[in-house]
Each structure stands twice: as structure tokens, then as C-alpha cells.
Amino acid sequence: MMSLRASSQVPLPREISLCEPRDAREHFRRLGFYEAMGLSGHPLVVLLGKRRLDAAMACAVSRASHLDRVTHYGAWLGTSTVDIVDPSVLAPVADHGTGTGSGTRPVIDPDTSGGTSDG
Amino acid sequence: MHATTGGPYTSDTGSVPGRGGCRSIDYISRMEHGVVIAVGSGKQGKSCSLHSLISLCWPDRPKCMLDRMEYDVSVFPGYTRVSSPSEVPVGSVVVVEDVNRVFHSRGSSRDATLQRWLGIISHRSNVVCITTQSMADTDVAFVRSQDAVVMHKRMHEEDLAFERPEFRVNQALANHWISRSVGRHPEVDERAWCFFPRFRETVPIPKVDWWSYANSHMLREAVI
Image (cartoon, rainbow over all chains, first blue to last red; front, top):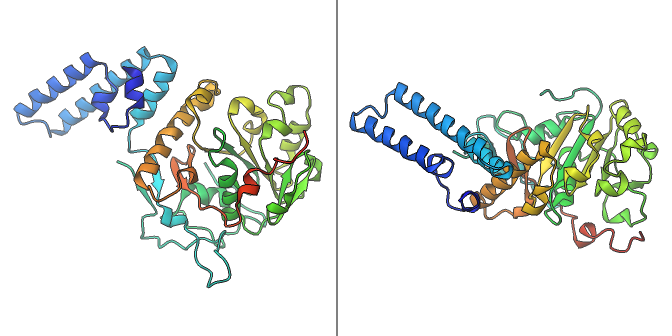
């Protein structure tokens, strides 16, 4: 199961791809309860839900073998901590026919975002 | 982390501003001394990306290649070849391809040459750039007490299993984030992507225009 999850090309959400099945069932049951009560968006519910999810993933990581733990850790970091730099940021500028301009970089407008956080 | 400042090679001319730019390229451009390590499995673009990075960050800085084997260095425009650390010019960027050939992974326990050299690269304003197929095959002296920037390429699962534990997590992350970057930008050659864990960035380093088959097979005619 760990290998299948690690090798999967399908972008599964953290709750499904990282937790033990019983932890995931508990997580979604709790979410369903708060949603039925109309409290799913309450800041305290969101905060507690995140803490429980982190604790569940920590348990899953601690139970896994080393390499699985590495994969879990990588997926746990999720999509919010690494920037994928857009190729246009570092694209060489044309130097008016004298060469391809390798080694020179365009000046970036400070108001232009140079990267995209994948999240 | 703080960029090393001062010296003739830390000018901001042509550099991308940190705000809105690329953190890793920005920092590396400002390095006066330190170590850049390109790690990844074979034929994943380590050398091409490393030379492209050097061209991007230090276009006007002297460059040399450190290797005891004889080969034609003319395929690397602007580079000279040196055969020992004592020949490395002051202020230059020095490239060591497949570092385990030149400095054995456990060599510093028997020979202090590497340690003596790395101890003075800050005085001589040298940036040492190395390529290696795994950190397990690399002398840890390169990352001890140095301003070291690790640039990850893809690593096969079999190689990852034998990687040093200290670097295994970042390498697994690199595989993950490079795959994501390839998926997001399919128009970019997948071997252009490099993961810098220190700066939490995957960067598509544009290939230098002079890179060719001869560069990636420079030791084809070398005598062992």
C-alpha cells in the first residue's frame, strides 16, 4: 500500500494519501459532523482539524519504514513550501543578433511575481 | 542565511533582484566563495546544468576545470584546465566533474590536501563546483564548514537507497518536485530542472548555447 501511494501519479489530498485508513475514517467522520452542524468553516474547527491531521500523519510516518517515511515526509510538506520558478524568469535575452545572450538575465519588474508557489 | 558580500565578483550588475526574482540564482550570483554541489543519477543533466548555472551567475569570472586526467578542454569555451588545487587561480570558479574520481570519498582521512584547499578557498575567493552521482560517494569535507549550496537533479530509487541519510530526504523531495515542475511546464526539458532545498525552489536553468555531445562525453577518449 505504501509503495502504491508513493508511486501514484494521481495527486491525492494529504488526508487520503498519508494517513492510515482508520485515521482517515475518523478524520472524515469528524469533518462530516461539523459540516452537518454548519461549523465546517469555523476557525477553531479548521485549526483543530489541521492539528488532528498533522498528528495522524505523524503517527503514519513513525509507523512506516525509513524510505516510506521519507516519501511520507515529502508528501506531508505538501504543495505550499516550494516555489517552481517560471522559465521566463531566467530565459536568456536576445542580444540583437550577436549571440544567444547566455549569461545575461532580464531585469525583473519588482511588481511581477517571478515564481509560482504550487498550492 | 546571508549572502557573502564584498569582492570583485559580487557586483549586482546583471543580477536579478531578490524581490520577484529567483532566490537561489540571486544568492549564488553573490557568492564570492563556497561550494556548489550538483548531485543526481547519471545522465540527468548535472554537468550541463552546472555549467549553465556558472554562465548565468558568473559570466565574467575566470573558470577552470580541475582534473588529473588529460582531455580536450577547448570544448568548454573560456575554461582552462588545472591538475591540482594549488594551480587554481585566485578568484576563479573551479569545476570538478565527477568529484569521486579526483577526491575519493574517504580520501580526506588519509590525505589532507582537500581539507587544506577547502580551508583557504575563502581567502582565494574561489567557488568550487562539483558534480557527483551521490553524496555517499562524496567526501563530506565539501559540506563541512563551507557555504555549500546543493543542487539536486533526479536520482533513481536504487541510488536513493544508498544515499547518505542526511541528504536522502532532500533528494526524495527533489525527485518529487522535479516531477511536479515537469508536469507544470512540459515545454521545458525535464533535465533542465534543478531543486535547491536550501532555497525551496525548483529552477529551470537555461542551457548554455555551446553545450553539445562532446561536452557530455568529454572523457570518452581519456586514458585511465
